[in-house]
Image (cartoon, rainbow, N blue to C red; front, side):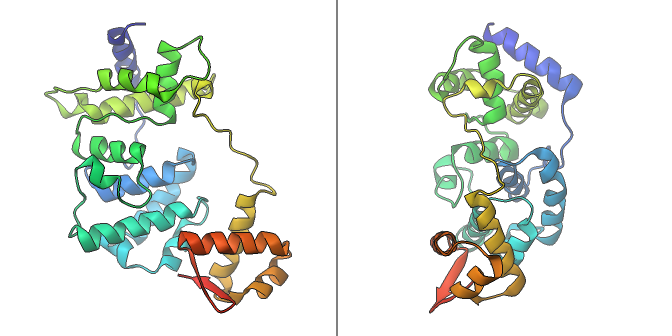
Length: 272
């Protein structure tokens, strides 16, 4: 399929089936960053409720920056991958303290902020300011693999990025025909494809998430929830309360300290 036919197909589907989501068609970079951070490795259905609760509790980037990490982690419960919440708060602090509360519009500057990678930086530029930029995430990947590499396997993003760059609107007269809506359209089409075939599995970047039950992620969740509930505790108290192997508890606690979630004073662990 050629590029023009591809674009016509994507726009047509979007006009008929575009999703209405609370973080769309807004220009607040903070709220867009919150949604993009939550949507990493988490389904939209789970994010919708948590997004509304989070924005109600922390309505601005400054309010998030000034809130204790413990409150942020409590609000984040249910989404998993708590490192995302820590990075989100660190970025809020950077924006508040070093950028006077205003998000930079330069990709290289955004990439220096905690937890912001190529995809999130591109999403911020496109969705907040409608700036033509190139980025890729799983649903965009699905749309391009489906149309341009239907019989291929192990498709690298290096093959997709030039195609994405070619299709992003550079000159547009109406906002709804700009990069913002083009990426919305691509994502919605990719979501539809995943319901039947999930072309992103043909990507070299596809990662199959392991089972949560009994995993290292579950142990991390147990320990963090425990400390959020009890407050500071010693290593031995945590081991006794959760009946986990000592080496597993030590591994998780050390990782949380490195990530900036916990701090250790003598043998006592607490939320930073």
